[in-house]
Image 1 (cartoon, rainbow, N blue to C red):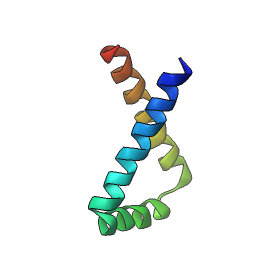
Image 2: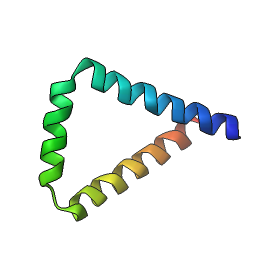
Image 3: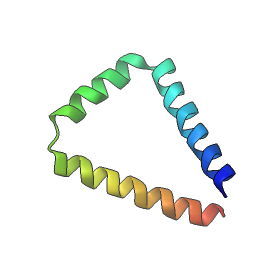
Image 4: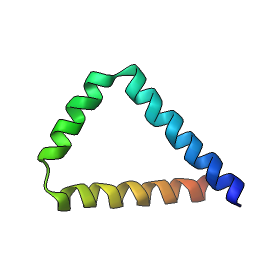
Length: 61
């Protein structure tokens, strides 16, 4: 189980790194826009992302 967790964390780092490597200016623009959003809005987006991720993980496994 811990091995799967660490593998998942590594994949997150790879995906984040790919975004920063491939489109750093787009990432900066997205972060500027995110900084303008209300914290509650960011929290809702985060909750939705968690839900989609958990549902997708359940379907894959």
